[in-house]
Amino acid sequence: MSKFWIMLFHTYKNKITTKSFIISTAITVLLVLAVTNLQSIISVFQSDDGKQQIAVIDETGGLYPAFAKQLKAADTDNDLQAMETKESEKDAVKRVKDGEWDGLFIIRQDQKGTITGAYKALTISDESAYKLLKQALTQTKTAVETA
Image 1 (cartoon, rainbow, N blue to C red):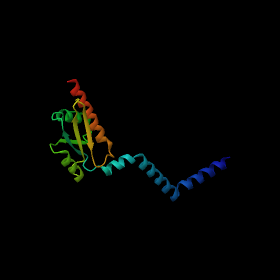
Image 2: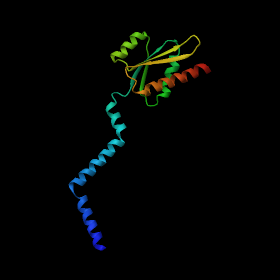
Image 3: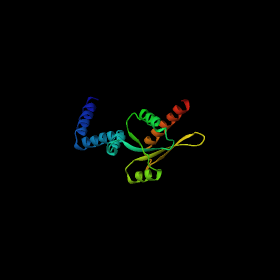
Image 4: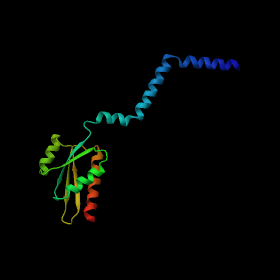
């Protein structure tokens, strides 16, 4: 039985010291690390300046200050830079299409007093901006209704 253990350890030592075993183990470790950190790797290559510029048209005439305050509170990562614009919707959409802004958010209030928002962008693959705008608008609605 003692010869079995000697043979086993000798064979094991010879196998793990081969160049092919070391290379395949290193490749496997790198592959596992890449797969587990894939989201971080993608975010490094996708980040351009970090902030999305969103223009806001306030058709109500007075909700933008409260909306901006709620958006600043909701955006803890400072991913969005919202700015109010007095341009027409048509001109603002053209600026979004030209790439000057990443998106356009329009705040409206109907005759019943219901506050709604519309988000326009070239691509909505990144839902985080839309979610933050929607959350800030909901908080603004609550603040206006309770005041």
